[in-house]
Image (cartoon, rainbow, N blue to C red; front, side, top):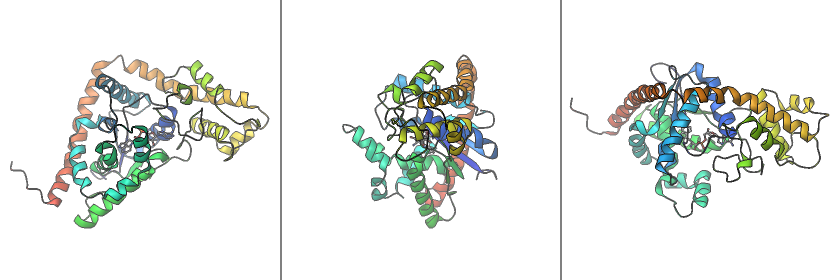
Length: 334
Ligand code: TYM
């Protein structure tokens, strides 16, 4: 809660090219939920450096992501769309919260274990304390709700634990946030290995639909999607490939699993894959078109970055000063 209004916070890493899972699991819900809340959407570039980045590429990707937020339908007049690295409060609160987080808690984070195994030559402390920075992101804006895909659930749980622990000592300082995980699209799987989640960092480009893929590429990737051989369009644990396509179709069209099964009861996999591909092409087209327009207007994006960065900083400082006072840091002399 900020200024008497319920608050929403979410963010995405500025690494790789956004894939369909990011869109269906998060971005689409941001747009759908936005009207009810005071919203903060961050390009979390500080999180990105837990893995080595090429500086020029990181800068380019961060800007592309910020532009994409707007292209997807987030109005920068109503929503605060900004770079995490432009608001120093994230790092400051992260340090404070790290003194209220236990090593044992961080050790249990599955994303840390996963990323550490993939980056064995660079298991840095930032990778380990990543969830503390994420808690700082959320608590800094007193967020009531955090829309994310289901892979972030554990990070939301630790955020709640840290907030409650801090409040237990100092009184009601932080709003304890609720995750918002959509009914459909919360976990989109790889098109090439449907037991693995779709990911920006997948080496096989056919495994993911990227938000900027053209229609032919999207259709081709769906046609090649790995499925089983029984040709029946039915949602089931033992049919992960087809179940994933039913999920994608449902998230793209708003249709339930039952409706989809009924619609394709007498179709084969070929027809169904084409229909899923076409639904995704239609879903992404408006965002792709707006993105192409927006990137041409450098001055407009620059202004959004400046104005929203300052706005985020204002609210971040409000919480930070409150926290610093509670902890016992000396007051500033004005
Ligand atoms: P990131 O950048 O990996 O992903 C951004 C959002 O996309 C969702 N997502 C998916 N949803 C469904 N299916 C998938 N295959 C899929 N892949 C990704 C993620 O759940 C996420 O919502 N740690 C976060 C970024 C972050 C953040 C925050 C999020 C930093 N601070 C504070 C919320 C609040 C991350 O790496 O997301």
